[in-house]
Image (cartoon, rainbow, N blue to C red; front, side, top):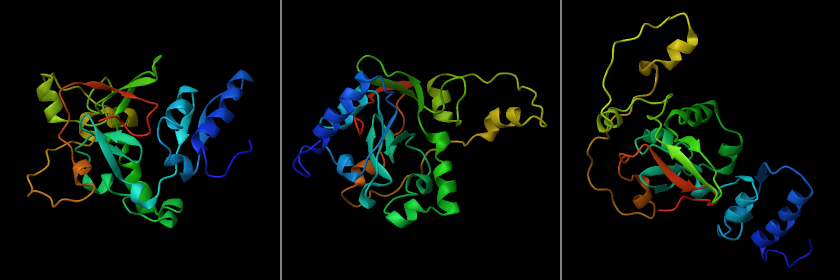
Amino acid sequence: MVNTPHKRIGANAIITLTPLADLGLPARFAAVDRAYTDQAADHFARPARALGYQLVLDYKQDQRGIQGSAHGALLIDGALACPLIPDRLATATSSLDDAAIRTPSDELNALIAARQPYLLHHKQGPNAHQAIRLQCPAAGTSPSVTCPRFERLHHRQGGRAAAVDLTDARQRAAHPSAKPRILPRPATSAPTSSPRSAASRPSPCTPTTSATWTSSARTCPT
């Protein structure tokens, strides 16, 4: 497509992607550079996801780490996580330069992998409105963390202890004591104001076990 450079970047990308569906080509992942990351959601992210694409975005140095929050969950590098995720995991990529991200150290890879149990689980969707349902990592039949607050709010009762075959790796991994345990954060003094202080620590999880977010937005609605 021929057009003025740096003009209508998102709109032109959607014009290019739209006919591909008519050709029967599958819509999977759309990897884009930072020019598209910075586009308004209505110009690129929402229409691209409405076409069935999952976006692979490249973040700038000041966009990495904690990016915001929605309904109490933290948005960390494009993924929603429990607000009580340990600080060292939530901020593992904060302010790292491009070299550190593109050639991550073993320590950084380990910190990023350790975020996985705290991420919200995909429960359902997307529906006709491109909305998905996510749930707390302590909820569901295969929770990835144990959370005393969740159990208290949902009145879970402890049952008889189940026998575990310690020679079976799957049984050991499924046992609650093998999962990260979420603990309340200690009280701290009020933080000094900064551009990111409002998004750094929202309130803990709400009593609901799931919430709905629109998958077509680059960042979640507040």
